[in-house]
Image 1 (tube, helix red, strand yellow):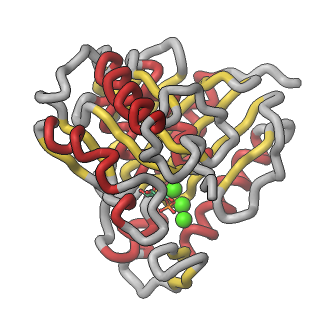
Image 2 (image 1 turned 45 degrees about the vertical axis):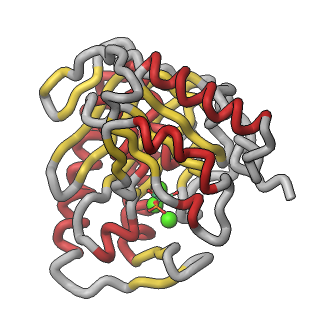
Length: 281
Ligand code: IPD
Ligand code: CA
Ligand code: CA
Ligand code: CA
């Protein structure tokens, strides 16, 4: 395996991701080709595929020995975390991209032997890049992010989407009621990578979601760890970076509080899915 120069890699990826951003902004000036994947709210556009191909070509040319896990199918079939793995989402927040033309991101997380090494989450319309090389501090553009401190549930702003109210919900309506009632407020922005970056930046205190894929959370978790944030499956168990899984990301103490709450809900039979995001019926 070739040794990576992580500082050089950071410079390269920032160049690629900014170029992807320029293409994405330009694409919004003409009509997009939009099609449905699994459902009416699961969309893919010509740009999701184009940007994935664009970035994969760059990665493969520069790092031919690395493997890529990506959403739209141009990556590799990967079943283990050996070597260097790139977790890539060309557009995270496709529904926002199509419907709002804002609040979507390009997300790239790089792991070596299963350990997070570099993260890049680019909010294209805000021209805001959250990034880190692990061990060197996390940044929002050029501003260094502070280490996360704890907060009480009462003083917290929590991001959770209302998917448990949907017909294909994975938890009961009442599972999160106590959390929602006690916290300062809730938000749901619709782009997991940015929501994780917002927890890392201290703009949100927690992010809770029942099912994400490796490309959604790959970069966000690396960024979060760099600033002392905690993450796990919804029930507090460690998550496997190659799985579709629930994700709970938060400031350290708040993470424990929410994970304990979820564990009690599971014990009382209120969960209708496994905390790894799989249905148990
Ligand atoms: C989606 C977004 C959304 C999350 C979904 C993801 P996509 O990614 O991150 O916020 O709730 O689970 O699939 O499909 O827009 O890349
Ligand atoms: Ca998608
Ligand atoms: Ca995504
Ligand atoms: Ca995507």
